Image (tube, rainbow, N blue to C red; front, side, top):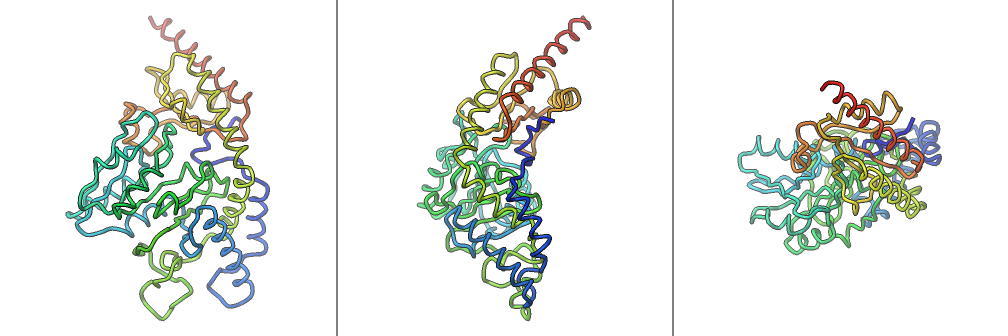
Length: 385
């Protein structure tokens, strides 16, 4: 099997990640922070080590690292938790439904709430000028997808963050696709909230997400339950991360996440260069074929989208899977506004998402398979005529 759907979830999991998950299942099975016995305390200490790792990775404090169910959960927590009466939010055309649907829900349930969608004027990604056009005197939050999960467009989050900080507007960055592939410095980039999907670029288990927070502002809880602290009180504690973490957390996945960050930090340059090289090679080879490519050559971060004219993306993906054992993703990728901007809202696109463990031979085989599909498709059309 050739796996090229790493933007959905990475197939490769490093040995140290696997070992961390197994150790959690064998040695750290206590409920962290819920009991005073040694196993619970030992498990809680391991979880706190991962908070430190995440905090150092993004330049914030460990108490402002919140573990969530997944990246969608983290985005919902940030959006609903910072809601302001009579407020306005700006997002972008590149957003995933994990941003669009919460904003639409707020709009439909709060008559005083509104949001605007910044369109992309640059060929390469969202710019500050795109955001600035949408700001109003009621804007309190900007949500920006950093790397498009559809075609790899990259937003200029550092420039956006600088201007938003000057205007005292909160900045939430969706790092689902960028995590593990870019260096994030929340203080330098003026990012107030940053979300991660560890099972993608950090090669970690599914079932855990992360919301990292930077700055002095409040996020209201959106889930309520036990935290192991202030148990006599019927309201959530004010201290982070307990304020936003209720219920039992996913210790095995969290410990795997910590090791995933270590693996990425130790191999960052190699990972980045390999993905860039493979993406550039794929772009070069497919640009020779009669297909529509939606990824710019400059966006060589492993997310590549294309269509064969007049052929549904699902038909191409099914052919690659069934005839060649190649895994790609077709459809709308849960990002309807991005596809609308690309003119692919009717059938979506074929997305190839590359990992550093992929090889040139695998890319060559993909290209060959696409050539065969085009040849078969053209022959079928001629026979029909």
